[in-house]
Amino acid sequence: MARKKVLLTGATGLIGRACRQHWGDHFDLRLAVHDPRKLPADAGDAVVGDCEDYDFMLKATQDMDAVVHLGAIPGEDTFHNLLQANVVGTYNVLEASRVNKVKRIAFASTNHTTGAWEWNGIQANPDMPPRADSLYGASKVYGEVLGRFYADKYGLEFVSLRIGGVNKDDKPRNIRSIWMWTSHQDMAELCRLAVDVEGIQFAIVYGGSDNPNSCLEFSSARDILGFTPQDHVSDYLHEMPPEVVAKHAATVWQVRSRDTGCTLK
Image (tube, rainbow, N blue to C red; front, side, top):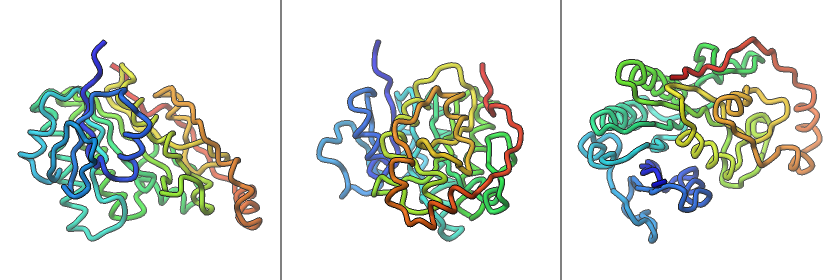
């Protein structure tokens, strides 16, 4: 069987690098790189440009089977900057993919789409209404709504990964990391599954490593993608201050009923 042709936007970012490291030669990759100075020496098939440039995205998505869309501003910023990178950029990826008949989009969303549920002590799951905790979170909600529209109207397959906490140290660093940490290898595997698992028209899943007592409903990744985390927060609790471990143990999240948040073909 021929390898799937996959465009990886944001290929030189933290998650992009993790994907390239852990995927090996599983996919026939094309890298979309924003800054030519960061172009990897072993890039192979690579294109340089911005997701905000529609013509560039038309070129980048040509002949691809799937896009793993990581290219974005990955945190809070001004509305203008988020509008261009996260809103216009995501539209361009989806529209160019529709034109070029790309089958599947794996979209890097965020826990910040529902961060305000966490503020209120409620564990977030895919069926709950978005409750963004920032302009950044709101920009990713837009990406998910746009993905739903393209799935419904045009048949484009769309899997949104609401990512927990990924950091350069590749281990939990504080109480929020305990609640939602995602290791590099687990993140790469989530992205791979979001491309490879067949039969999904649209899905939203929370992705993370094995996090006891998480504020995010991580079983959605298991239920929808068949994901099994390889890394465990419990392996790092001994490195945390006692008061942090105690707070983690004492926290009780309100859990509300849910379905899978997944639409099958």
